[in-house]
Image (cartoon, rainbow, N blue to C red; front, side):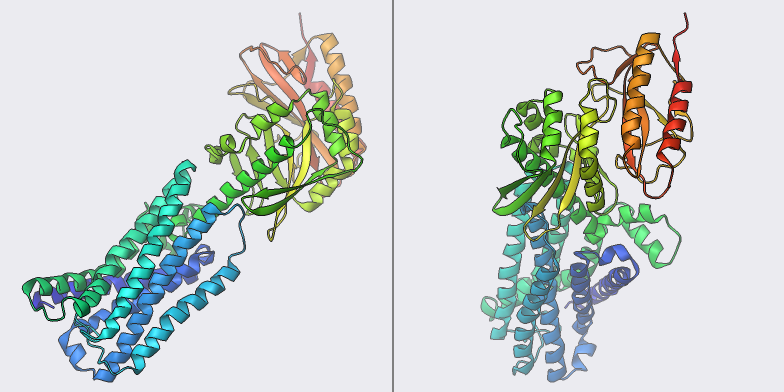
Length: 577
């Protein structure tokens, strides 16, 4: 290497080493980085760290102090590290592709073990061969690697020609699949492509030079060859810095990582968001959400597509379906089918309207704006036409709803009922994956644009609601401009009677509380759905009663109902003339 380039090279070696150490420490200090595929980043970073350190052997005094055996040992480990770094970059590209192409999310632990075996076998065998060979380990680039012009340099060519095209292939396939995906998925994929591109451009030159030098440049000793060797070596010294810069290229990631490493206080939610692409786990979580929404909506679409237009009753209590989704078996349970078939008939829902609402392609368009994660496994999703909510529920919640579905739907289908409309209870299970239970229910007042809301409750805390919504403080009806609801005498009497019947039904259900919600707009608009519809003080509104499963706060149903009706009567008043 040119003497004047050595200080520059060593400077980048030092920077690269620090960068890799930061990533390795970050893996052990930041819980988020340990989630899949964080181990891939760790393995690549450890391998890259050795590669960075090995570049100090480019200094003549260091290399001269090592005998052939020592240089051969260091060179063997260098090749081992290159293979490991390439392997886990390839595996990461493969995992992104699998996440985007497969219809189900499978546990990666088994694949990770296979990846580990493949990486170790492909790295250890040639490394051992190099270790026991008679080559001296002094490479054409001036480091301890594979002996200059040794036939073993073909290993560099094989490693590069196998891994680089496969990385490009899986990235290209992922890019092709993503063309119809959301902006967030495309953005995350562009970041991954950027990391792979930088990795390839920084790692390939040195390998390519050693391989070409053995076969093509063996007898050449030109100035161009010297410049090519120096350029390849300089890029190699910079590789760790370049890859680290690519990984932390997102805004504020480096600063947030540094703050955490120094144990400075930082809002964890903010930090978690900022380092999301650094660890890939948030991007993988996002792909999982995309897949869950797609599978759920697709299965609902298949259910309604195969259901007769008349929604005929069946002999069994639950209806079971089996579908083939992209070659994977999918099992769908439609619980208490007859109860909800009566709901479809009572609301005159057509098969075509349900198919449109649960169209997979339409629902995946900008789905993130209608998706709300409750925790790692539960979510609420609003269909593209804003008519229906799909909400994942626990097995205990599912059993609870199944037990009360007959009484609830018997009241729900009455014309004067204000109970929130529930349209079905389902579970979806793909082969070798966890089961997802969910409920489909109406979005109250979906016809109202830019609506406001008010809520009436009979108690201050309602436990964990089945319906995710905001609810008010004790004994109050709240909203932006609304304090009371004034109605004509005849209409008010009918509503009070209906509310009394609705709450009587709910009070007979074990561990059940409820609250009343009004969504309204100040503009009078023509509304097709007249059920639950109100007009008061120039407002067009819908009113519904939301059910809550409460196991925490033990309140007597009669006391809760009495308080609720008392508050209702104080908030709903006769119009004054």
